[in-house]
Image (cartoon, rainbow, N blue to C red; front, top):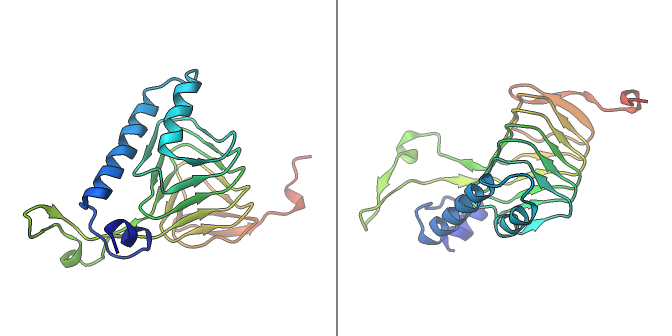
Amino acid sequence: MTEKEKMLAGKLYDPSDPELVSLRQKGHRFSYEYNQTLETQEKDRARILAELVPDMGENAYLQGPIQFDYGCFTKIGKNTFANFNFTVLDCCPVEIGDDVFIGPNVSILTPVHPLRWQERNLYRKPDGNLTDQEYARPVTIQKNCWISGNVTICGGVTIGEGSVIGAGSVVTRDIPPNVFAAGVPCRVIRPITDEDKMR
């Protein structure tokens, strides 16, 4: 397996691999370029996003600033909106469904590092370059979810369709569909029902 294949499969991999370094640099460059544009520069923004996140649905909108590790490993559904300071470390696939609302300062973090420092710290490869060992877990946010501000979503998590994640939560495990969940760590507070209708 290549290091890229290992990474996407959730296996230990070497992030200093030249192919991964090149893809990361590309993702970082396009994130930077997007962040230099104004909201009114719609054509420039569309061009950059087509390079950064090729699998993006119709009418999806990223307010910016944004920061992607790769971008090419993220899928964003139609009509999805992400507010200011959206961070996606997509070392494993990130899939965001249709009609998802994402508040400001939301981070999706797929990378995982070994808990033991003996396996986490930098080491020198035979060629003399420093690297580390890491792995990643995918994240899925199903359609019709609302992720409130300042939420952190950790690798390996699926958030079920129609659920709402309260502000400031840290999501470390799966959240079922159609519930309100919040806290650190995030837990289900209650189901969302017809009693929650605004009218």
